Length: 125
Image (cartoon, rainbow, N blue to C red):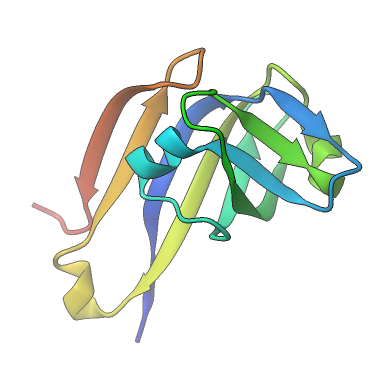
């Protein structure tokens, strides 16, 4: 049996651009990717805090230090520049792996810098 757990999350990232004509994905500053443990091409769920829209896409690498959070392709119609989004990735884990698993949450400031990083255990203490 596998359990689906949160792997990493960017909390309250600020959308800096949208491009409906791009072929899809979300562009994320590579510094934020490293802080959260996100990988290029990793599947993510994006929740828009301002309008409630949720969509799934994949990550592409943005310039380090740029603060870029760009929503591309059809998903660009589901958000707007200036909206706050939550970007989440998940992992499948066996019960044994759950015992050692921690999710990584990166809380973003208004310029999409990592203001705080928190690791959450996946077991009750």
